[in-house]
Length: 637
Image (cartoon, rainbow, N blue to C red):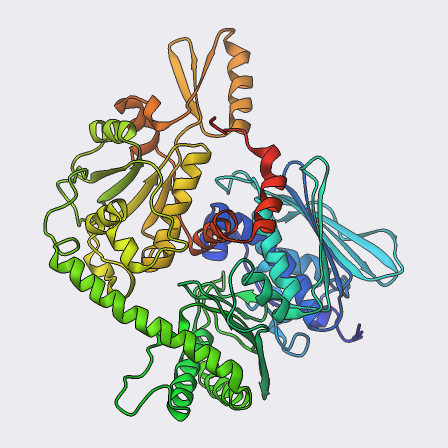
């Protein structure tokens, strides 16, 4: 590892203000739901990864302790603790309490950085019930504690150290977040991404909430090629080994690894300075444009496409593509603080040229793999043409363009308005209660019976012939796939309402996978929600209260015991156990219900879990089930 003596308090540039974070946390972390909660961990870990990228760190430890207390520790240089020349207080306190303070505002310290805005540590501090930071530097251990972003101790020496590094410990504020329960799989997936992208780092992940403690050491010397093999697990790949490309132009560098599988969908993981840009951006557009140009040019050059043949479409080239793209950019322009999409036009233009040049160069030499890839692309083109014919046939049979809505749909009188909602409800019984309890002006009900089609291996033709999927398509009015048109959406919100058990979670995952793969703009535009029905109804005296988690139940019962000796707990096994009034009161009334907006991260996670549980990788499925079997509490037999 390197060392750099001029990383000190003068490196920290300051822009004041922290109060707005607690007032509008969504502006800084995206949401106050699950996605925002997990983003807290990413912000702190990203600071350690910036040290890795600079060559100053090769070890990171992340631990979740009981009470959902998070520890992130690294062996980097340690946050400077000496007095800031402008602020006249410790640089550590400046970094942790000023919104726009950090070395990332000075390009002499971090040439490329994931934490572009420099607000990560202070935002996490502001949204935590408490935070403690320990810094190993200058042969000492320095410490400061904060409560809801406010320092409650000075920066002081609490011990000696013969190494350097930073340890951050924090507890998310339950006054801010809908839930403070971390999903260890989400965190582990993010850490795994970082370990793949930074092959020189070792990341330890510990979940101390499990008994025995869950521990995973993540280190991948194969880098993104190893990542690609991981993404392709359980699928039949076209090439024995992935194709790897890399190049540099000025301060812009890229790494690219790709292969093809027999799956229908594209799997692309794109990163800018280690940030997973789940909504894509100019770098992903550049990749698609370069692939389309190069493969069409080479297909004509070797005679696979004749003079009068149409070019392959981008969708043909992307079908079955599994790809990891990692770009390092000195000054990335992200859309939003959560950095979901890259906006640099100059990066897209330069990257397009670089990928075209390197891809053509490699495939001109590797004719064997070129032929395999173009055969796969030709299969996709032929399937696209067959699928188009199937859609036209379905249309002629009035399945999609039929003006009549599904017979099971109880439509609302004001569909298409700003507040209209479609509830996709599990089961006819719950569907009946929902129809009786709803607000008929703005709420429509579509019951579905059992589990919908497994879209993991289903082609478009099979999808269109499935009655339940067809009912959903017709009710929404948007069509699917290439024909999807969000302007024709008949409702402002689509709310998935399933039982709070394993079967309900499975059905919700199936529906999310359908939306993710064939109607993704619904998720990207914030149209998909999940209802959150209560697990319990606690009655005492002439009163009752609905409870949504086991943790909440304990708290409610303790409060009731203080004033009432007698109480009764009713456990809801399914939506069908609620009468219409209860269903309205708990799950459908816009003024009282709890619903969760589905973000793209949620859908991607559902898709990953679905692939594990329904795909061909038996080992991944066995590991997942073995780890989570002990945590299943609502298994209906």
